[in-house]
Amino acid sequence: MRKLNIITIFLLGVFTSCEDIIKLDLRSSDPQIVIEGVVTTQPGPYHVKISKSTDFYEPGIYPPVTGALVEITDNEGNDEILS
Image: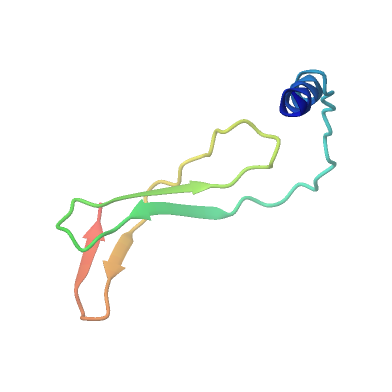
């Protein structure tokens, strides 16, 4: 019976809790280059995405960087240039 009371109190706390939206005043910053990709030991093709960062409160639209030359190299002297 005591276990049932504890569960009931917990559930009441979860379903009746409040939610406050807090918006922090974050400073704006200059866009930075962001490079995302996955390169493995398996044969390609490999994909690399290059974009620019945005401010925290901007929607998830990241401007792409075009015309970049991406070269992948390893410590054995192998290299590959991605188009």
